[in-house]
Length: 317
Ligand code: SF4
Image (cartoon, rainbow, N blue to C red; front, side, top):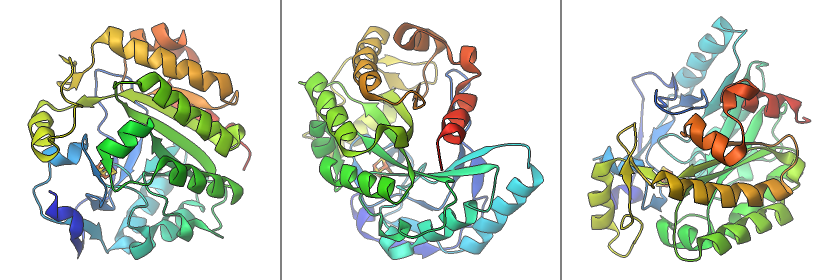
Protein backbone atom coordinates (compact mmCIF):
# COMPACT_ATOMS: atom_id res chain seq x y z
CA UNK A 1 0.00 0.00 0.00
CA UNK A 2 2.77 2.48 0.92
CA UNK A 3 4.78 1.57 -2.22
CA UNK A 4 1.61 1.89 -4.27
CA UNK A 5 1.43 5.58 -3.40
CA UNK A 6 4.61 6.19 -5.42
CA UNK A 7 3.73 4.47 -8.69
CA UNK A 8 1.25 5.71 -11.25
CA UNK A 9 -0.24 3.06 -13.51
CA UNK A 10 -1.86 4.37 -16.68
CA UNK A 11 -4.42 1.96 -18.04
CA UNK A 12 -7.80 1.56 -19.72
CA UNK A 13 -10.91 0.91 -17.66
CA UNK A 14 -12.89 -1.96 -19.12
CA UNK A 15 -15.88 -1.76 -16.76
CA UNK A 16 -18.59 0.79 -16.06
CA UNK A 17 -17.40 4.32 -15.21
CA UNK A 18 -20.60 5.81 -13.89
CA UNK A 19 -22.67 4.28 -11.05
CA UNK A 20 -24.98 5.25 -8.19
CA UNK A 21 -23.04 5.56 -4.91
CA UNK A 22 -23.60 2.30 -3.00
CA UNK A 23 -24.78 4.11 0.21
CA UNK A 24 -26.53 1.77 2.64
CA UNK A 25 -30.12 0.78 3.22
CA UNK A 26 -29.81 1.39 6.95
CA UNK A 27 -28.86 5.08 6.99
CA UNK A 28 -29.96 8.22 5.15
CA UNK A 29 -27.79 8.73 2.10
CA UNK A 30 -27.67 11.51 -0.47
CA UNK A 31 -28.31 9.80 -3.85
CA UNK A 32 -24.93 10.56 -5.34
CA UNK A 33 -23.44 9.24 -8.57
CA UNK A 34 -19.86 8.14 -8.67
CA UNK A 35 -17.56 8.56 -11.65
CA UNK A 36 -14.76 6.05 -11.45
CA UNK A 37 -11.71 7.86 -12.88
CA UNK A 38 -8.97 5.86 -11.18
CA UNK A 39 -8.06 4.03 -8.02
CA UNK A 40 -6.01 5.11 -5.00
CA UNK A 41 -4.24 8.44 -4.53
CA UNK A 42 -0.83 9.82 -3.45
CA UNK A 43 -2.17 11.08 -0.10
CA UNK A 44 -2.13 8.52 2.72
CA UNK A 45 -4.98 8.77 5.25
CA UNK A 46 -4.88 6.52 8.29
CA UNK A 47 -8.64 5.97 7.99
CA UNK A 48 -8.78 5.46 4.19
CA UNK A 49 -11.19 2.64 3.39
CA UNK A 50 -9.24 1.74 0.25
CA UNK A 51 -6.63 0.09 2.47
CA UNK A 52 -9.14 -2.68 3.13
CA UNK A 53 -9.80 -3.28 -0.59
CA UNK A 54 -6.69 -2.57 -2.62
CA UNK A 55 -3.76 -4.89 -2.96
CA UNK A 56 -2.02 -3.39 -5.98
CA UNK A 57 1.31 -1.63 -5.45
CA UNK A 58 0.28 1.34 -7.61
CA UNK A 59 -2.35 3.99 -8.10
CA UNK A 60 -4.26 3.82 -11.36
CA UNK A 61 -5.57 6.46 -13.71
CA UNK A 62 -7.86 5.51 -16.57
CA UNK A 63 -6.81 6.91 -19.93
CA UNK A 64 -9.94 6.14 -21.95
CA UNK A 65 -11.58 9.40 -20.92
CA UNK A 66 -13.56 9.52 -24.19
CA UNK A 67 -15.35 6.32 -23.16
CA UNK A 68 -16.06 7.84 -19.75
CA UNK A 69 -17.56 10.98 -21.30
CA UNK A 70 -19.62 8.92 -23.75
CA UNK A 71 -21.05 6.91 -20.86
CA UNK A 72 -22.05 10.11 -19.05
CA UNK A 73 -23.69 11.40 -22.25
CA UNK A 74 -25.79 8.28 -22.61
CA UNK A 75 -27.07 8.36 -19.03
CA UNK A 76 -27.75 12.12 -18.89
CA UNK A 77 -29.42 12.22 -22.30
CA UNK A 78 -31.57 9.17 -21.60
CA UNK A 79 -32.87 10.64 -18.31
CA UNK A 80 -33.35 14.37 -18.90
CA UNK A 81 -35.94 14.65 -16.09
CA UNK A 82 -33.54 13.37 -13.42
CA UNK A 83 -30.92 15.56 -11.74
CA UNK A 84 -27.50 13.94 -11.29
CA UNK A 85 -25.07 14.95 -8.57
CA UNK A 86 -21.78 13.47 -9.74
CA UNK A 87 -18.53 13.05 -7.85
CA UNK A 88 -15.16 11.53 -8.71
CA UNK A 89 -13.80 11.22 -5.18
CA UNK A 90 -15.04 7.76 -4.21
CA UNK A 91 -11.92 5.69 -4.97
CA UNK A 92 -9.39 8.47 -5.32
CA UNK A 93 -8.89 12.18 -4.61
CA UNK A 94 -10.53 14.29 -7.35
CA UNK A 95 -7.61 16.69 -7.85
CA UNK A 96 -4.43 15.31 -6.21
CA UNK A 97 -2.86 14.21 -9.52
CA UNK A 98 -4.65 16.73 -11.74
CA UNK A 99 -1.35 18.43 -12.64
CA UNK A 100 -0.45 15.21 -14.47
CA UNK A 101 -3.83 14.26 -15.91
CA UNK A 102 -5.67 17.60 -16.41
CA UNK A 103 -8.84 15.52 -16.18
CA UNK A 104 -10.66 18.30 -14.32
CA UNK A 105 -10.63 20.51 -17.43
CA UNK A 106 -12.40 17.89 -19.52
CA UNK A 107 -14.95 16.97 -16.85
CA UNK A 108 -15.85 20.52 -15.85
CA UNK A 109 -16.37 21.71 -19.42
CA UNK A 110 -18.27 18.56 -20.36
CA UNK A 111 -20.73 18.71 -17.45
CA UNK A 112 -21.25 22.42 -18.21
CA UNK A 113 -23.31 21.33 -21.24
CA UNK A 114 -25.97 19.63 -19.12
CA UNK A 115 -28.87 21.29 -17.30
CA UNK A 116 -29.56 18.11 -15.34
CA UNK A 117 -26.10 17.55 -13.86
CA UNK A 118 -23.70 19.01 -11.33
CA UNK A 119 -20.14 17.91 -10.69
CA UNK A 120 -18.45 17.89 -7.30
CA UNK A 121 -14.65 17.64 -7.25
CA UNK A 122 -13.62 16.62 -3.75
CA UNK A 123 -10.04 16.95 -2.54
CA UNK A 124 -7.53 17.19 0.29
CA UNK A 125 -5.02 18.83 -2.04
CA UNK A 126 -4.54 22.40 -3.21
CA UNK A 127 -4.15 21.46 -6.88
CA UNK A 128 -6.49 23.91 -8.60
CA UNK A 129 -4.45 25.39 -11.47
CA UNK A 130 -6.41 23.59 -14.19
CA UNK A 131 -9.71 25.06 -12.95
CA UNK A 132 -8.76 28.59 -13.95
CA UNK A 133 -10.59 30.17 -16.89
CA UNK A 134 -12.94 27.24 -17.53
CA UNK A 135 -16.42 27.73 -18.90
CA UNK A 136 -18.15 25.75 -16.12
CA UNK A 137 -21.62 27.33 -16.41
CA UNK A 138 -22.08 27.24 -12.63
CA UNK A 139 -22.33 23.44 -12.75
CA UNK A 140 -19.19 22.52 -10.76
CA UNK A 141 -18.71 22.57 -7.00
CA UNK A 142 -15.15 22.39 -5.65
CA UNK A 143 -15.13 20.66 -2.28
CA UNK A 144 -12.56 20.15 0.44
CA UNK A 145 -12.46 17.65 3.25
CA UNK A 146 -11.67 19.56 6.41
CA UNK A 147 -10.75 18.48 9.86
CA UNK A 148 -9.21 19.79 13.03
CA UNK A 149 -5.53 20.63 12.63
CA UNK A 150 -4.15 17.68 14.65
CA UNK A 151 -6.17 15.21 12.52
CA UNK A 152 -5.05 16.89 9.31
CA UNK A 153 -1.42 16.71 10.39
CA UNK A 154 -1.32 13.24 11.93
CA UNK A 155 -3.92 11.21 10.06
CA UNK A 156 -3.78 12.67 6.50
CA UNK A 157 -0.20 12.21 5.36
CA UNK A 158 0.98 14.25 2.34
CA UNK A 159 -2.31 16.19 2.20
CA UNK A 160 -2.39 19.99 1.87
CA UNK A 161 -2.29 21.98 5.11
CA UNK A 162 -5.39 23.73 6.42
CA UNK A 163 -4.07 27.07 5.14
CA UNK A 164 -3.28 25.64 1.68
CA UNK A 165 -6.75 24.12 1.35
CA UNK A 166 -8.49 27.31 2.44
CA UNK A 167 -6.35 29.49 0.16
CA UNK A 168 -7.24 27.18 -2.74
CA UNK A 169 -10.92 27.44 -1.78
CA UNK A 170 -10.69 31.23 -1.62
CA UNK A 171 -9.12 31.29 -5.09
CA UNK A 172 -11.82 29.01 -6.53
CA UNK A 173 -14.52 31.22 -5.02
CA UNK A 174 -12.85 34.20 -6.68
CA UNK A 175 -12.95 32.36 -10.01
CA UNK A 176 -16.69 32.00 -9.40
CA UNK A 177 -16.98 28.35 -8.40
CA UNK A 178 -19.45 27.14 -5.81
CA UNK A 179 -17.80 25.52 -2.81
CA UNK A 180 -18.55 22.65 -0.44
CA UNK A 181 -16.83 21.26 2.64
CA UNK A 182 -16.89 17.87 4.28
CA UNK A 183 -16.16 17.34 7.95
CA UNK A 184 -15.68 13.63 7.50
CA UNK A 185 -14.41 11.72 9.35
CA UNK A 186 -14.97 13.69 12.53
CA UNK A 187 -12.50 12.17 14.98
CA UNK A 188 -12.62 12.51 18.74
CA UNK A 189 -9.18 13.46 20.05
CA UNK A 190 -7.71 15.53 22.82
CA UNK A 191 -8.71 19.16 22.29
CA UNK A 192 -11.17 18.25 19.49
CA UNK A 193 -13.57 21.06 20.30
CA UNK A 194 -10.87 23.75 20.04
CA UNK A 195 -9.49 22.07 16.92
CA UNK A 196 -12.79 22.06 15.04
CA UNK A 197 -13.57 25.58 16.28
CA UNK A 198 -10.28 26.86 14.83
CA UNK A 199 -10.91 25.18 11.45
CA UNK A 200 -14.46 26.55 11.20
CA UNK A 201 -13.36 30.05 12.20
CA UNK A 202 -10.58 30.00 9.57
CA UNK A 203 -12.96 28.59 6.97
CA UNK A 204 -15.42 31.47 7.32
CA UNK A 205 -12.61 34.03 7.54
CA UNK A 206 -11.26 32.71 4.21
CA UNK A 207 -14.28 32.25 1.93
CA UNK A 208 -17.61 34.07 1.51
CA UNK A 209 -20.33 32.14 3.37
CA UNK A 210 -22.80 32.46 0.48
CA UNK A 211 -20.45 30.60 -1.89
CA UNK A 212 -20.82 27.42 0.18
CA UNK A 213 -23.61 25.21 -1.15
CA UNK A 214 -23.28 22.31 1.28
CA UNK A 215 -21.34 21.06 4.28
CA UNK A 216 -21.48 17.45 5.41
CA UNK A 217 -20.67 15.92 8.78
CA UNK A 218 -19.83 12.28 9.39
CA UNK A 219 -18.23 10.79 12.47
CA UNK A 220 -15.49 8.19 12.05
CA UNK A 221 -16.74 4.79 10.85
CA UNK A 222 -14.73 1.92 9.45
CA UNK A 223 -14.86 -1.69 8.38
CA UNK A 224 -13.57 -3.88 11.23
CA UNK A 225 -10.71 -5.27 9.14
CA UNK A 226 -9.38 -1.74 8.59
CA UNK A 227 -8.36 -1.48 12.24
CA UNK A 228 -5.61 -4.09 11.95
CA UNK A 229 -4.31 -2.62 8.71
CA UNK A 230 -4.37 0.94 10.09
CA UNK A 231 -2.57 0.00 13.30
CA UNK A 232 0.01 -1.99 11.32
CA UNK A 233 0.74 0.80 8.85
CA UNK A 234 0.51 3.71 11.29
CA UNK A 235 1.61 2.48 14.72
CA UNK A 236 1.74 6.06 16.07
CA UNK A 237 -1.94 6.75 15.41
CA UNK A 238 -4.36 6.55 18.38
CA UNK A 239 -7.44 6.79 16.21
CA UNK A 240 -8.53 3.16 16.50
CA UNK A 241 -7.96 2.95 20.28
CA UNK A 242 -11.32 4.30 21.33
CA UNK A 243 -14.68 2.79 22.18
CA UNK A 244 -16.72 1.76 19.17
CA UNK A 245 -19.96 -0.07 18.56
CA UNK A 246 -20.95 -2.02 15.43
CA UNK A 247 -23.45 -0.04 13.35
CA UNK A 248 -26.32 -1.44 11.27
CA UNK A 249 -24.03 -1.42 8.23
CA UNK A 250 -21.43 -3.59 9.99
CA UNK A 251 -19.00 -0.68 10.38
CA UNK A 252 -17.52 0.36 13.71
CA UNK A 253 -18.79 3.77 14.94
CA UNK A 254 -18.63 5.86 18.08
CA UNK A 255 -21.43 5.23 20.55
CA UNK A 256 -24.53 7.24 19.75
CA UNK A 257 -24.15 9.61 22.72
CA UNK A 258 -20.60 10.41 21.66
CA UNK A 259 -21.63 11.02 18.06
CA UNK A 260 -24.42 13.34 19.15
CA UNK A 261 -22.03 15.26 21.42
CA UNK A 262 -19.53 15.75 18.58
CA UNK A 263 -22.22 16.67 16.06
CA UNK A 264 -24.10 19.11 18.32
CA UNK A 265 -20.95 21.03 19.05
CA UNK A 266 -19.71 21.20 15.44
CA UNK A 267 -23.19 21.89 14.03
CA UNK A 268 -23.56 24.76 16.52
CA UNK A 269 -20.24 26.26 15.37
CA UNK A 270 -21.21 25.96 11.70
CA UNK A 271 -24.70 27.36 12.17
CA UNK A 272 -23.33 30.53 13.77
CA UNK A 273 -21.60 31.53 10.53
CA UNK A 274 -23.27 29.56 7.73
CA UNK A 275 -25.36 31.32 5.09
CA UNK A 276 -29.09 30.61 5.27
CA UNK A 277 -29.13 28.52 2.09
CA UNK A 278 -26.05 26.37 2.85
CA UNK A 279 -27.30 22.82 3.32
CA UNK A 280 -25.67 21.20 6.35
CA UNK A 281 -26.30 17.48 6.29
CA UNK A 282 -25.18 14.15 7.69
CA UNK A 283 -23.49 11.49 5.66
CA UNK A 284 -24.90 8.12 6.74
CA UNK A 285 -26.87 8.85 9.90
CA UNK A 286 -30.35 7.86 11.06
CA UNK A 287 -33.45 10.06 11.40
CA UNK A 288 -33.05 9.89 15.21
CA UNK A 289 -29.63 11.56 15.01
CA UNK A 290 -30.92 14.18 12.55
CA UNK A 291 -33.76 15.04 14.94
CA UNK A 292 -31.60 15.11 18.03
CA UNK A 293 -28.93 17.35 16.50
CA UNK A 294 -30.72 19.46 13.89
CA UNK A 295 -34.29 19.27 15.17
CA UNK A 296 -35.80 17.70 12.04
CA UNK A 297 -35.62 14.56 9.92
CA UNK A 298 -34.62 15.00 6.27
CA UNK A 299 -38.00 13.78 4.97
CA UNK A 300 -39.64 16.83 6.58
CA UNK A 301 -37.66 18.94 4.11
CA UNK A 302 -38.14 16.68 1.10
CA UNK A 303 -35.21 14.31 1.78
CA UNK A 304 -31.44 14.77 1.58
CA UNK A 305 -31.18 14.67 -2.25
CA UNK A 306 -33.86 17.37 -2.62
CA UNK A 307 -32.22 19.52 0.08
CA UNK A 308 -28.88 19.33 -1.76
CA UNK A 309 -30.44 20.02 -5.17
CA UNK A 310 -32.22 23.09 -3.77
CA UNK A 311 -29.01 24.40 -2.17
CA UNK A 312 -27.24 24.04 -5.51
CA UNK A 313 -29.90 25.50 -7.78
CA UNK A 314 -30.87 28.35 -5.40
CA UNK A 315 -27.29 29.60 -5.22
CA UNK A 316 -26.31 32.25 -7.77
CA UNK A 317 -24.20 31.13 -10.73
S1 SF4 B 1 -7.41 11.36 0.10
FE1 SF4 B 1 -9.16 9.93 0.03
S2 SF4 B 1 -8.52 8.30 -1.40
FE2 SF4 B 1 -6.66 9.41 -0.79
S3 SF4 B 1 -5.85 8.27 0.97
FE3 SF4 B 1 -7.16 9.91 1.81
S4 SF4 B 1 -9.20 8.97 2.07
FE4 SF4 B 1 -7.98 7.63 0.70
